[in-house]
Image (cartoon, rainbow, N blue to C red):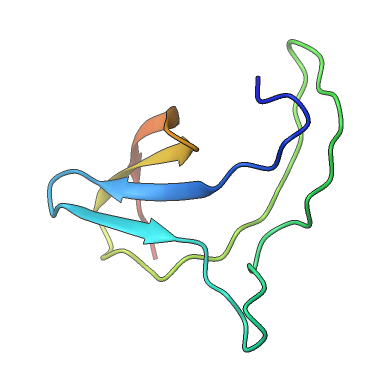
Length: 78
């Protein structure tokens, strides 16, 4: 989908008009997976973990990779 490039992952809350970026540590490194390229075949899955500032519980967000929506209307729990 994106070739051999690492793309930013963001959460967008369209109701409250807020965007959430991946949190960075004290050295400015994203709290997400390191830029690793691997192939994923159709009908298979892969996991990656990212840390964001918490949107309010019950908010509905969309998950974007670069400018492309991956998932929409995801309910925030917790």
